[in-house]
Amino acid sequence: MRLLNERLIWAYPIVGIPSAETLNDVATKAKKAERGEVPVLVYDYIGIRDSWMAHLAWLDAQIKAVKTIRVSEAGWALAGMDE
Image 1 (spheres, rainbow, N blue to C red):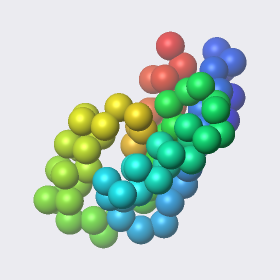
Image 2: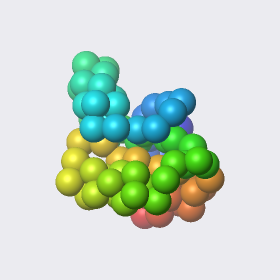
Image 3: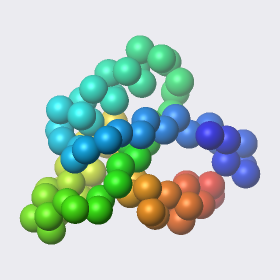
């Protein structure tokens, strides 16, 4: 995706619950693609328990190689990356 400021965002949509293994897979694929931007993992959080959501928030804070975004919040999150 290209943002209004011309920044390219490489989104990797997934089905299911993201895990550290999923983040590693996305980071590896993005590195091979040599895009130069932090990849964005997009997921649907419907049905994910609160405890797992807390874990995902922790993973997102700890692993800077991949940014995670809930699909329902993608518009706001991407707009924030447009700065």
